Amino acid sequence: AQSVAQPEDQVNVAEGNPLTVKCTYSVSGNPYLFWYVQYPNRGLQFLLKYITGDNLVKGSYGFEAEFNKSQTSFHLKKPSALVSDSALYFCAVRLLPYGNNRLAFGKGNQVVVIP
Amino acid sequence: EAGVTQFPSHSVIEKGQTVTLRCDPISGHDNLYWYRRVMGKEIKFLLHFVKESKQDESGMPNNRFLAERTGGTYSTLKVQPAELEDSGVYFCASSQDGGAYEQYFGPGTRLTVT
Image 1: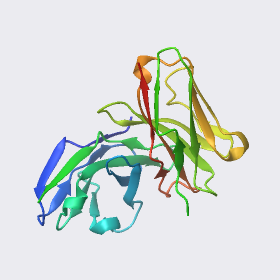
Image 2 (image 1 turned 90 degrees about the vertical axis):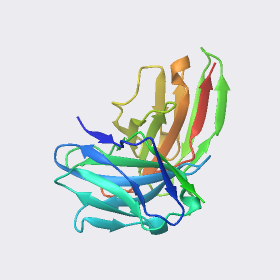
Image 3 (image 1 turned 90 degrees about the horizontal axis):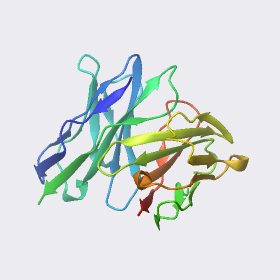
Image 4 (image 1 turned 135 degrees about the vertical axis):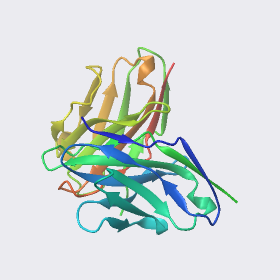
């Protein structure tokens, strides 16, 4: 069985400080990993993905994430948080290569950036 | 390029009634997915279409849920009869072929069963 854990319910950070949203996964094989963000009253927006290659991937809005196979983690980071980054963040995994295309999501982290 | 659209945005129905949700994927995306998020819980996979064929429907909760994708374009998800536990946000997503492609999500339909 595959699963994704986002251990913190809410992440509070002051504007301008580094932002980290944690994600660990539990799958067999080589996963495809994704981060999505949901702003209020909006759908999920794709931020970035890890497929293969460089462990550090860069995405939209200045976000990046680091794939760590030994720790089975894929933490989302941003060097300097903005108030507009306040949203719900979801980590997701898809099993490769023989799994289907379904995504398994974590429960989501509410990020609050304090002005 | 238009994104994934869903209709309606909200639906409030009584237990026992029928509701049909619609999803229009991004043009050219053969893969279409339905997911559901019950209040405060994880987003759960429901099913996956490739064109008009159901590739994987293992996430469908029970036979009160029926999904169709006639002609391989838009998709509908019907709940009949609705139960209280069906309340939640239903998301539709679409993607290009291949496992490496990200899925693009619609805004969701918030279903409330009273």
